[in-house]
Length: 445
Image (cartoon, rainbow, N blue to C red; front, side):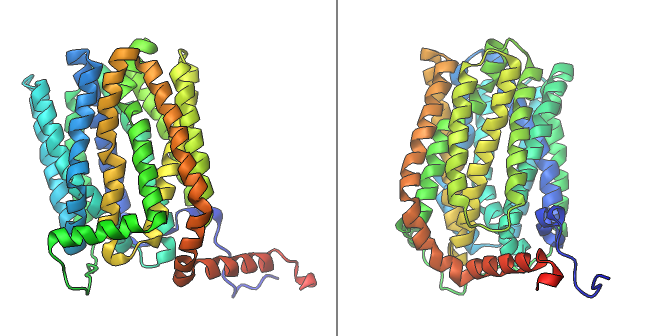
């Protein structure tokens, strides 16, 4: 008979969702999940609205630039604020302002008062909100998880939630736009913020307050910059994220053109393409969620980036809907695995008192470089076409991973002492021994 006093080994399914056992994280996860569906609906509807009103690829680039440039300019200062202030309260403020922005956009569109300058203004406003929201949200996760070894799982689940929303949101947006227009998408996004505000109000945490004496803002900013870019593993990851954001994120801006002019479809076509990317990304996030350790993520980053670049190149040549959807699956998988793996490593090795600033540099690289890519891609697409533009972007993604791959052995040596201090390496060794013991028949012991 089995020994009923011995706890059963954790199943793969329960291990994949282990961060949800924490009440605060569970509330955060559910609220963000609802809100992100609305966010994706708004993003797709906004791009389609601008392209419908203007027929200009360049203005699509301007839209992307306007919505994301504040993250580049304000990201570092937002990181200082996150390290000094209560992140919970920051998120309550940013989500309330986001609700106001979405409600205003919905009202203007539904009353036919919307204009392109107003869209650009509201996009800049949303970008300012996001600069503070993303920095606080990225560093807030650690306050929701009691056991640090589950941080990587929480980050992977965040990515799963983000990409499940990316799967649902654009697909719903395509159907809604075709049926009743873009305005209802913006209204739906505004309503979705009620869920995230409710979850944030239900969360009870003890703020992580640094015992170090607070430096003046500029000096604190300099300290964070020196720390992040003076340590090669952090520097290499941030620079890689910046490169991928610059070269790969323009795909989202160019998507309406591929949907309407290359594949000769409608808003539904764009929704299907975004949905396929979301399926690939969700698969990638679940792949990361089932991993038990941060070890080995360096090689995974390299492979995921190669897959992303190859996917972009293949998509640029496709003129067939089925093939384009297939390419988007691999592109979405590579993108999220590369980004989430990089995020996981950063969150693991960074000092707690500098977490907000480092994650602001991550957000600055991820979102702050995207507007430059959008602007350049929009201008280049007007000159050589969207197909050649995306081909060039895919080739540059492949080139960007080369420096990271060359430096990986050196970076492993530098992070090894951190992993040992955190108990990650011994825990892995103990876990392997335990697994070996469980798979050994009793008579052989």
